[in-house]
Length: 335
Image 1 (cartoon, one colour):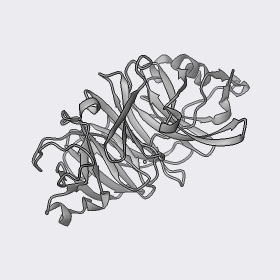
Image 2: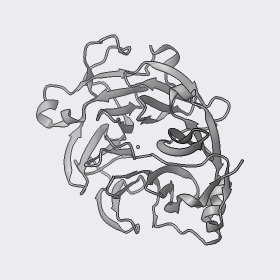
Image 3: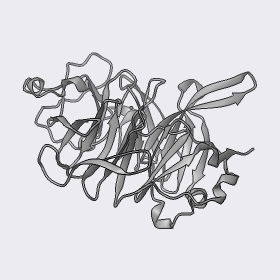
Image 4: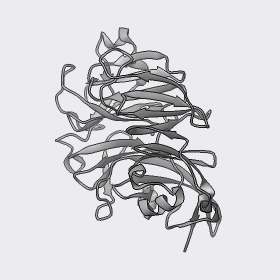
């Protein structure tokens, strides 16, 4: 991502053609060994996780790495297999899978606190199914998203569940009383909403929680209270992983309409869907890696798609090895 859900938000155009701007070569503004996620704050600050170095970088708009934190280890500012990050504009939250915790930093990468234990659920309120858990239960946080209401959604790989929690309860003195989860969902007793191999969680402004599932080859959709809604992308997705949300202004017969789109980072393409339930989560189209390769004039090894984000008219496209800044005008709609 995501409250600012810009961690993975992007505006893209379905059914894409190359514009005249692609005649010039678009170079990466920064390179990485094994990038995992990108987040942009409303002020234009760029944050990227490099999994190979276990580092969180802060970049300026030119791509210069102006600060970093991390390195492999168990210290409070170190990581072991960090996989995702999200921001509310003031804080950065990192899913530190190997250390089984979520780390919180401010926007200057100063350490704030850690969520070290798997949150304990509150007594069920009938809003989502909740299996028996304990504070000492194994967990591996692999993805994060902050909703527009300010709640933090944590995807736990070990239990194949999403946990919703108030991030303000991260403080150590509160953790001593056990950090209560508001609720959790997607586990073995979730019925049709049972996650198999979840990869990424993303909340939307229209009140949905999306979870990509590589084994199901689909994206699971829940409401903000964890109630299962539907699956989307069946028959279209191969290995869905990264997810993002973006607001798109579309010209319709009645005038300009602001729509919310979901994009899915798949094996060989970015796929787009309407994110609103009233629109039926309609499939809108895709941008293939081959099309992006022509836009970026990049080598194949540089185009393992990882993540994307949007700020203003600039599209931030993250591959495993590089971060690209593209003007939105590079992508043009076709009939």
